[in-house]
Image (cartoon, rainbow, N blue to C red; front, side, top):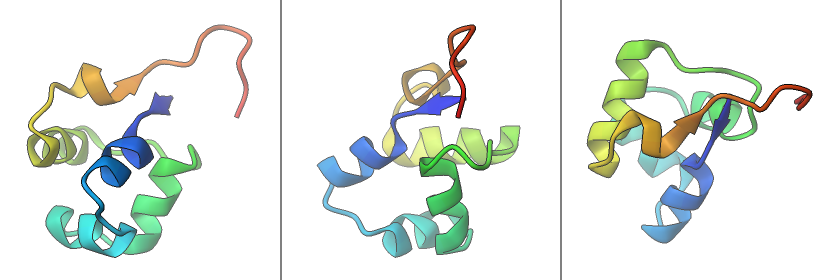
Length: 69
């Protein structure tokens, strides 16, 4: 799954740690989501959308067929 988390975080000048604190997760979890190594649970995806005041679809998108990580 592709995501815009890193871009959205950078636009707000937040560190991974700051975002992690807002989401009540570890910094390592934020890093893993940003790099595509981990897809968030649905409740976490909703929290992420809420923090950025966006719809989930504005942050996450399925990878196109044939795209790999």
